[in-house]
Amino acid sequence: MRNLLRGLAAGAVGTTALNTVTYTDMVLRGRAPSQVPARAARRLAESAGLDLGDGQVAQHRQDALGSLLGYVTGLGVGAAYGLLRPRAAGMPAWLAGLGLGAAAMAASDIPLVSLGLTKPAEWGVSGWLADIVPHAAYGLAAAVVFDALSR
Image (cartoon, rainbow, N blue to C red; front, side, top):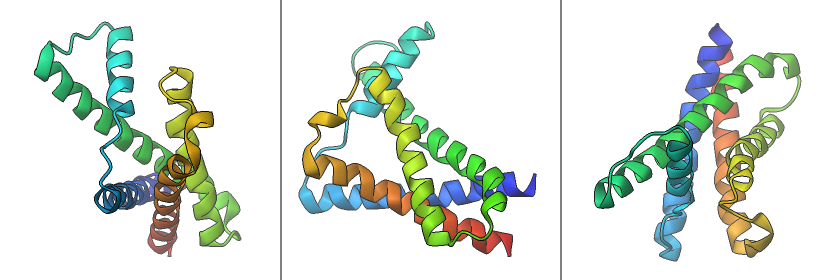
């Protein structure tokens, strides 16, 4: 149970790191936020039979649900890491962190690709960097925090 809770805490820190890197990128490049999470939320709500409302109300709910899905992913991947990390105790935190970042990226991107909401083959270098760098920050931050909490 302790490792699960440490993993949740590490996932929360990792999610904060991911969001910080993402928003910094948006500021530096002046780019708009991705609408993919909101579209995923809409698609999932529709398949669950949930009515998000109409017009602006529906858009606001989709945006919020898209953001919440990101937190669920970050916390869930962190919790899973908390359960698995003790089995790889000899692995350096930086290496575990990069693996964790890749796992978080997969947990985020694979469902979006499966729903037909994004096509990584069309992203280009800047699109890949905008996905890889924040997820690496997630993984590194979460791994360092988990290891610190485990001492």
